[in-house]
Picture 1 (cartoon, helix red, strand yellow):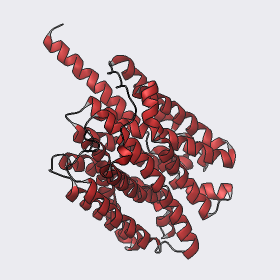
Picture 2: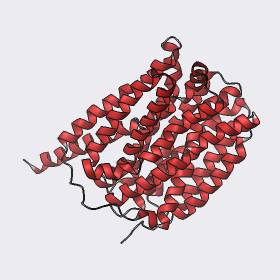
Picture 3: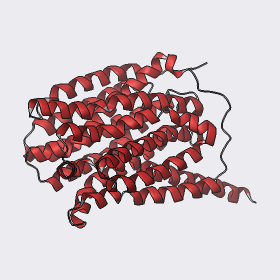
Picture 4: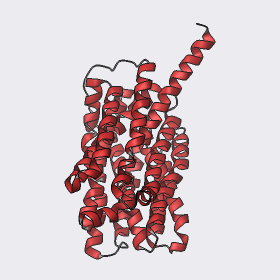
Length: 396
């Protein structure tokens, strides 16, 4: 085999690995964002109150966090590739089962889907650190772009799918089984075609004792709280303010789609800086500005504020993922830090949509959640000032 052919084969294998990673990332949000556009329909069909609907939007995030610490253990037992494949299969089964198993089944299936997503979300940053160590910023941006694209497609297409299915929300939710099956097939293909390095022996590093790890975790959790409030409630908030349901679902889709640009740009810029404190503060500030516009600005301006919100949240989430690689010295530490940050962070974030549902039920208005959102944003900036310093978690 010539050197040129060998180089070409290596490049092809890396492209296959990249395709597998991106297709898995595409499936990390549709199970969540497909619910909010038809949330009112689900509530009417099942007789759920605002608190019940808040619990439905909270449950997958909570389970995502609970399952996240299990991911490094599964990776050590099965290998990270097989663990991702198992989670993909479980996700596909949950997506087809949850709409058709009555009220309790909807909650159970949603919980299982959240857990499967949590496992995959923890493992992918470690795989990026391992397979693309010289391009962490760019690869994290591409991975986040695919994640946002999947979220946007589900948010924007679920309500039109419901209409196409004669007004039935169940097949509209079940539709998102299809990309999960495609991702599983692609993942199997790259597992067989690409030789993977063996996992290092040994248990988890002591990231839970590292203050910097807790600052990274706090930033992940607080920016995720804002994100899941948007995923869970933005279409309902905009519809209550006077937008048509399809337009309200499209607004969430557009906001997530706009995230693609900042998800690519923020890690590429932040990874080249001496530290990331300025970038982290900026993206959270932009997020708060966009949320304020969605809550209080006239509806005639809403698409501008939707775009601002998307730019902020795309940069915030991408930088949270980038920190998992930048603050880790190797792939194993990145995986352990990812498990901690996403486990603790998403359990905390799960309280956000539930709290919004309770605040709305108590006060009867969406304006009341503005103060709550502002406090979360300020706390995220404070956490980012610590997590953005140029230091390593567990350096020894």
